[in-house]
Amino acid sequence: MSWHKGFRTEPPKYRPVAVVDIGSNSVRLVVYDGLRRSPYPIFNEKILCGLGRGVATKGKLNDEGMARAFAALKRFRTLARQIGAKQVYALATAAAREATNGDQFIARAEKALGCNISVLSGKEEARYAALGVMAGIPEADGIAGDLGGGSLELIDVKDGKLRDGVTLPLGPLRLIDMSGGSIERAKVIVDEAFAKTDILKRLKSRSFYAVGGTWRNLAKLHMAQSHYPLHVLHCYRLQRQQAMSLSGLVSGLSANSLKEVREVSKSRTDTMPYGALVLERLLANSEPSAVEISVYGVREGLLFSKLPVRKRDSDALLSSCWDFARRYARSPEHELELCDWTDQLFGAGVLKETEEQKRLRYAACLLADIGWRAHPDYRAERSLGMISQAAFVGIDHPGRVFLALTVFYRYDGENDDDNLTRLIDDEAHQRAHLLSSIFRLAYILSAAMPGMLPKIGLKFGDNRTLVLTLPKKLADLGGERIDKRLAGLAAELGRTGKVVIGS
Image (cartoon, rainbow, N blue to C red; front, side, top):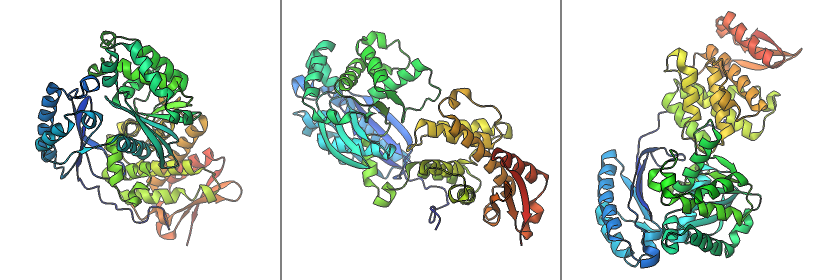
């Protein structure tokens, strides 16, 4: 039975779902294209309300922040209705749950938004953040850390399961209040909190998965400093010492200095040094191998928890690639046939591959035809950009580049992108060329239409040959172009191409 049996080939249905996130610093609306394994944001807006300013010292949400939040929620209610989101999930975090006037605020906020708002406990917030990390990085093994304006949630993730977690009062807004705006005093507060946090001991030689806008801004800054060629934050990795050096530098900068840094959001210049301080001290008090950025967090974790088990267990990358095929390929059915057709050469077909390489091969097959609507001269470049910059999850940066280059070469892209190729090793580069040669042969045989490839054989023969078998009814498909493509593919494999007409 094929791995893709039961896949629906019609384009994904548009069933938008909205999440409203009322945090200590911002109130945000994100509308996704549906409740699916890998949801795509179709609308994203935040209003910086600063609800958490003063909560640590005064115990109450400030009046100005609440007024801005109510106005934002009324706008979000209208926008969600206009976009067509029939389901709106709303949640509130540290500031609302800890303020003495939090209940009154939530009551008014629910009227403004027109739906119930769940006030998450620290444990629930940590759980959703970790679920978000696991949804976007299924192989996650380490500690997920979600830094909001009022708190830091830490939770252990491994083998697709959540372990124990903890909530710490270390959000940048809270630190500003508690320290009186002194970064040195904030450092003492952070170190005192981490000294009592046993979970950090379990970070040794594992990854720290960083969630939150402040830490995403740090990653942007590191990308710019290192001239990193792929501007995709999800799964961006910094080695421990790199992250410590950067966060230590930023924690010592003033807000005015940060305003001059293009990569830092102007809305975060006040809180950025304190968020950087939290990361620097966390790394100083633990020994992770690396810091990895997750763009999935509480909101995506909430949606992930709503999925049936079957969908939660499906492959995040292949789900995304299949959605791409259903939207952009001439024939999604053909891309599934291409997956099966390439099986003839791999695994039992002599060419060895790991399970991860097999997964990436299938992903490449699903994406192989997404550039067909572009002008022929630009199909390679368009596909390279679409795939390398897509909002895929469940894939690291080398894997993403492998997929992009495979389809780039499939469209006869002649020149390497030297910046991107430095993110993959020679073996992956050669494999991308090999798969693209298989694709080029497949598409001139099938014209991208289903029903042809299952009738055509491709296997290794005796005397170091690569044998293409055409059934007698399809003998007229043979010719110069087929011979040339087959010869090119065979040469890459150190063999000689041979066409055989079957019965």
